[in-house]
Every structure is written in C-alpha cells, then in structure tokens.
Length: 415
Image (cartoon, rainbow, N blue to C red):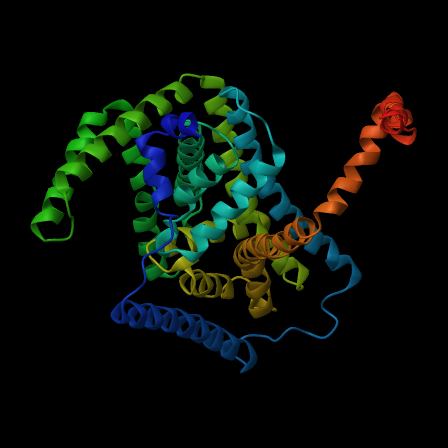
C-alpha cells in the first residue's frame, strides 16, 4: 500500500483531494446551496414554460396528428446510435492511451470513466468536476502513478480542441444559419472560452515555469485577500503538479500517430453529438437538413458555454428553441425534450444508477459477511469435503480408526 501511495504524483493527489469526505457545512453554506438549487430549478422550469407556451399557444404549429409514423423510428434509432457512438469514441481514446502507457486495457473501465466524467461535468458549475473525478476513478481502478493524469488531460485537451475546430469551421462557412444576434455574440465568446483551460495545459507542457508564474501570482493575490491559506505551501504543490503535468503531456504528445487518432476521435465525437438534434427533429416529422441542423447545434453549444450552470442547463434549451424555431417549428418542444434527455439527463441517470448499484452492494455485502461469520462450523463443514476430495488417502484414514487408537485400550488393560 505504501508503494502505491508513493507512486502518486502531486497532480493526482490534488485531483483526489476533491473527492475526500467534505467537512460539515455551516448554516450559511447550506442556505446558499439551497438557494442555488432553487434558482437552478426555477430557471429550467421557466425555460420549459416559455418554450411550451410558445409551442401550444399558437405561436408555432403544434405536432400534427399522425406525424410519427413507423418509418420515423428509423430516425429515433439514429439518435440512439449517435449516443452510443459518442460513448464509443471517448472510450476508445482511453483504450488507446492505456495501450500506449502499457497499462491494463479494460473497455468497462474506459466506458465508465467517460460516462461518470460526463455525470460530474453535468452536476458541477461550468463542468469543473469531470476531470478530477476521472483521475480519482482511474486510480481507484488500479492505474498507478501519473498515468490517470496523463490520460485524463490528453482526452480533455483533444476533446475541447475538436469542438473548437468544428466551431471555427461553422463560423467561417455556415455563419448565416444563426440569425439571433445575442446568441451569435455568446457563441463568439464561447469558442475562445472553451480553449482557455486546454491552452493553459498546453502552455504547461511547453513551459511549466510560465504557467507556474501565472498561477502563483493569483495564489498570492488570493492570500492578500484572505482567500488562500498557507500560500507558500500551496504554491509548492502547484509547481510540483505543473512539472508532473508537463512531463506526462510531453511523453504522450511524442507519439504523433496517437495524437492524430485522438484528435480524429474527438472531432467524430463532436460531429456525432451535434448531429443528434437532426435525428430527433426528423423523428417528430421535421424536414430540417443535416448540415444546417449540425451548424445550428454548434451555435447552441458554443453560446451556452459562457453560462456557468451545471450542464449549461437553461441556456442550452433556450438557444436550441430560439435557433431551431426559425428553421423547423413542427414538434420542436418535444424534440427539445428528447434531445436534452439523450445528451444530458441520460448521463445523469446512468451516474445515479451506477452509485445506486454501488450503494446496494455495500448494504447487502456486510449482511452476507455477518451471516457467514456467525456460523463458523458451517464454514468448516464446507472446507472439510474439499480437503477430503483433494486427498483421497486422507479421506480414507479419516473414515477408519487409527492403529494407535486400537492399541491404546489394550495397553490400558495390560496395565
């Protein structure tokens, strides 16, 4: 156990600290958390109310009777295939990195790393919880040293870069698909915003001293504002973490073929993710074109980036309805609900199911252990037949009295 802990880098330990048991919250913290949850729920309810009102009050055509015919389910199957292909692309990235780092290869671990990473992205503001959890989860699954950090950060950088490239392509060649000026401005701000953290990671790989100087400036500023305790200790941890990041990212980036494969999978993931609304709208009888739908969806995601709600909830639904309402009003409210479930609430459901199953196992396992420990003779009886079966001679001797046992009574009588 000590050897394994000694292999953990400072960067990995920083990632794991976020998942240690939290200290009891103060009354003020509980009130603020409650207000935040209430505001989050009200904002989502307001978006659903206004979009539903627009759908059913005559502002847009309602879903005509008989619109969904048997052939439409082909499009619904296409939507499900988009979700599965997205999970496959991100899981395959972890598989390729496991092989590159000569670690154990597990499709199950890779898939759950992707799914649970999305779960934590969607329940934390601005999606800040996914990567620290993935580092912790891979360590828990037995991946040693800095391998989890290298895999998680490489996956994150390529994923964000893939979306940035797709978004730039849409802005250059399909900028006319979005008419709402406000959403366009938000999208223009969102594209560079999504590259801030990857750019910081790349700077760290190229020159860790520059990034360390930037971070240390903000740490000392936080200390002066009484927001950071023990600034020198914090700075030392950050410098060690950045050096470790740099070494691992350089080692990963040295394999050009691997990085090309990772970028290709990331771009495919983003295209598949942005294709989902097309299949959902067609399922409900819409006639929007594929390229047009994909470009509009890129604007939806890019504009919602600047809204720091968990999973960009509220902003994504609003932008979706505003942009698509000009293209295809038929059944748009229901299409929005199905799209949001497949790309957002589905991962929340899978994450809750994963932890629910884990909790159930923890509840029932101790009961089985107590039952077995409360009847030790039963455990002995279970092992004895095995011992006899494995040693026929011993079983024969156990069934017959020993020679010593026969002689002892005669000796007693003689005495």
